[in-house]
Length: 206
Image 1: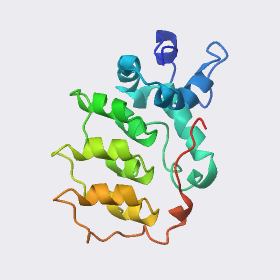
Image 2 (image 1 turned 90 degrees about the horizontal axis):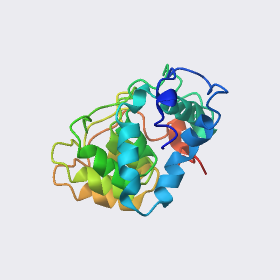
Image 3 (image 1 turned 90 degrees about the vertical axis):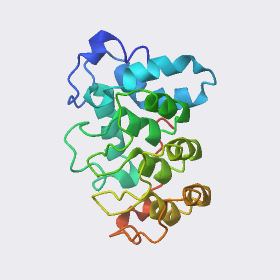
């Protein structure tokens, strides 16, 4: 994260398809920072994460991560095919997707990120932590009263509850049902039986 926060890296165009030879570690750092921060037990990484993730949609690392997801497994063709670069996928979305709970909490402590903000698929951070079976992230987000747990994505009409139920994430379903305002009868449009059925946790950096 220190490397990705270097000014010479932050100034790179976020739409580059690969890192230029002048910054050879960008590809590796972009793909693996999530894995490393999940293993780090101290709070020393949070300031670096905040510096990196606020405005992350304009960082080349966000685009490289999207490209890695788009080209891997069941994500190919149907998840990121409509996206041109990292627009709309914020640092909060990435922290949720990568399962870095304490960073999600730190980001929510700032005034620069909106918990209700959606990506190009119309998904909030809560949808991503539910799909990725990230219990800690779900618990953190559900503590926020300004969060609507019944907000459907605009691509498939799925809310966090049916997504978690489809993938068999019992612990996430139980957490969601603890919210008094959750609606277990909210209909979806095309979650059950959709080709996305094969989607499981993202193996970025595995």
